[in-house]
Length: 259
Image (cartoon, rainbow, N blue to C red):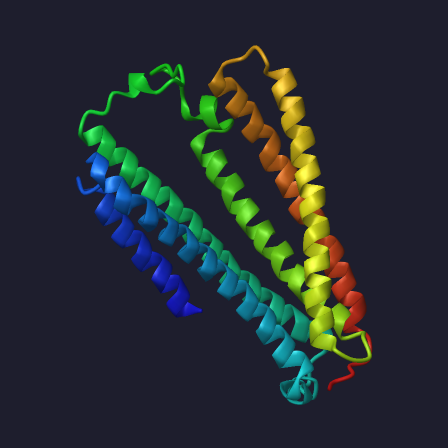
């Protein structure tokens, strides 16, 4: 996984270097900028997908294939094996998520700084922004609190994402045959359920926010949205992670039936 994270850093440095120049200032540059943006988005998505899949595969191979015969003879409990995989998986996926977030922020900063350096007329942007508006007025929290929320969501997101894959693998091992295929089916089933729950919660939250801020400015609406979305996402990640962890504890204590 180290080369993947190094690739994210390298991609970010190249992107920031390109955005800091005038290479995309002309109208003709859109022919090149759109494919490059698409390439960046697809690369970031691929890096994240490969990371999470690799972590899932290592968990499955370490505990439920031929390697499992050695792993389960070690002088440790099944939950100690599980916790070791969980800690390592969360660290790697958390690092990947952190680098991805920093990459997007760095590219956005580089693009904004370049535009500011060529005296971009911000008055043409129809946001009705006032120079006296602070960071908290737009993003709902002071910058330190905002960064702490982002870090907390990254940690909780990594925790729940890793456990979702682990619980899918463990559920698949309860099947008599086609255990790997069953694990994949469980994963997509759980993923769809979580997405539906999250989408409904976000839609309800957005509806409430729009009603409460119908007569407010754009910045006030945006600020209120952040103040509601961050706690909601934190609660969802935490609750889902706890449920998955309890299920994993129950399944890990069952008798291992290796293929």
